[in-house]
Structure formats: structure tokens, C-alpha cells
Image (cartoon, rainbow, N blue to C red; front, top):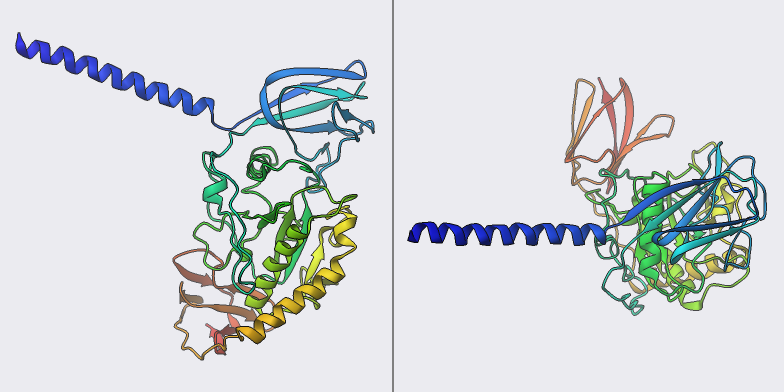
Length: 402
């Protein structure tokens, strides 16, 4: 009898534990990110939508479409997202707004789709920005902080060797001071609505100067700015995208925001020994020259990064170059010490251990591979028979691939 009693108590405890686990799972799911799509064909100028509580929404309109659609409470026509190029529809920027009701005006006869998303907040405050050392990497909010509780990005991001910093604006978010929430909603839109592997930008900068690391480099070898993003009209090789949070067509960014922008790029160009005032052909050596610090509109037809930012880029470039040269004076450029590169060439295959820093060129001058790309523990490259130039810290070698 005693053993039976203990068995019953054990069963009761087990049931309570299972119920507790189920309760926690339900609570977690109720607070997890959600994205849902709704299609509409309005028959009058006013569309009233009631749905689950959302934190942001995007509108897709089937082409051709009527101009002048408005959202109740927004004193301007909706803004189209110039990062999303599709032959069948146009897509608006992300509007971050917590509500369960959405009203559209002047949408009669327009076939549209509204994409709602609910993204829970992170229970942490925005960190303060440290600006004491202008030559070191600025203090940044890591994805593990702002992405807490959201789905992970796609694995195995691609690497690229930075040549240009591309300045953007998000075209929305003015007046919203919960910058972490904005970044979280951008991430969900980019990954679950646009279908990208991760958030498109390498860095995002808030109005108060807070710097967020965007696209997660995960296990990619190399610095954060050498992660290939999705921000520059399909010409993302050699670029890092820096998104200023807000719409700067009419209003100006804050001084703290611009100071953070200058510090981020000055740090990058100091590390890479690149002049902020120069230009390089992009995306290939046969294409037109592109400023090392460029606005999004210099790559395709867009208003980004807004007139108030773009019109001051010359001044921003000059100030960043002053900062970069001051870092050279204070810190000095570390001279690259000659090193012995370890590599093996056998039967058309080049083997280089992961820890080496190197770049491989063909005799036409095209870079065919470099350290950190392809991403793997070791780099094994199957190459065509011929002569290649292997450049590495401290020297270069000609290789004959048999």
C-alpha cells in the first residue's frame, strides 16, 4: 500500500510538471514573433481592417496601382520601399505602429495585400553610446541582444572585401524612440516578408546615436563590415550598408546620429587604410567609379538616403578623412610584418588553413577568392589550370596550378 501511495504522488507531480511545461510553451508562443497576410479588393475609398494586435505592417499593391493611398493617422501618402524590386507588385516601407485597427484611404478598386507582424519587445533598455576613443570600434548593440526571442537568420552568410560604405535611411520611424523595437521589426520584415537571409544592413544608427550591428556575421572569418548584405540594388559585393533610422528627405538627422555615422566609417577606413575622399570602380574593375562613401541613390533610382543626408555627404566625407588621418597620427598604421603563408597545391586544388589572411587573383587582375570566403574550417579551392597570384600579409607569390 505504501508503494502504491508513493506511485500516485509521483504521478501527480509528473502531471503537474507536464502541465507547467505546456503552460510555458503556450505563453512563449503567445509572445513569439508572428507574421500574417491579408488580401483585399476595396470597393470604396475607405478600408477598415480589424485584426490581431500588430506592431508593424507593410502594404503590397498589385501593379498597375492607383497613387495617393493613405493610412489614417499618417499625414502623407504611403512611401514605397525602393529596396524591394518586383515585377508584380510594389511594396511600402515598414510602418511600425502598435494597434489592432488599420484604416486605408483612397484605395478604391486597388487590389492590395497587407502584411501584419507582431514582434515582442526586448525587456532591456537601449545602451548608451561610448564615444571616448574615436579610433577604436564604436560600442554597438550585438544581434544577440536586439534579436532576443526572434528566429535566427539563415546560416552561412557570405563574405566580401569592403571597398565602399553605402549610406541609407530607413524612410520611416521618425519620432519613435524605441529604437530596439524598430530594428526588431525591420529584421522580421526583411527575413519573413522580403525573404532575405538576414536584415539587409551591416549597421543601423538610431537618432540618439546608438549603433546596432545588423547582419550577423555568425562564424564568418573577418570583421563585421565584410559581411555581404542586401541593400545596394543587387550590387552588394565590396560594400557595407549603414542605415540611418528615420526619413531624412525633409528633416535633418541629429548631430549625435551623424557623429556615430562618422565614427563608424572612420573606424572602418582606418582599419582598411582607405581614403574617405577617393573612389573605386564598382562592382567590377570595368564599371564606373563609385565614391568610397556613397549614398544609396548613387547605385540606383531612389531618394535614399534622403536629401538632407545626401546633400551633406561631401562634408561628411571630408570630416571622416580628418578623423581617419588623426587616428593614423595618434595610433599609427600597424606595419604588416612579413609572414610565411602555409599552402599546398596538388592536382588543381589549393589548400590554405583558415587562419591565414590572403587574396587570390588571376592574371587578368580579377580576385577569385580571399580569406573568409568561401566560409569553411579550411579553404580548398578547385581551380582551372593556370598561373595565379597569391597575396598575403607581407608579400605575394605566383602559383602554378597543375
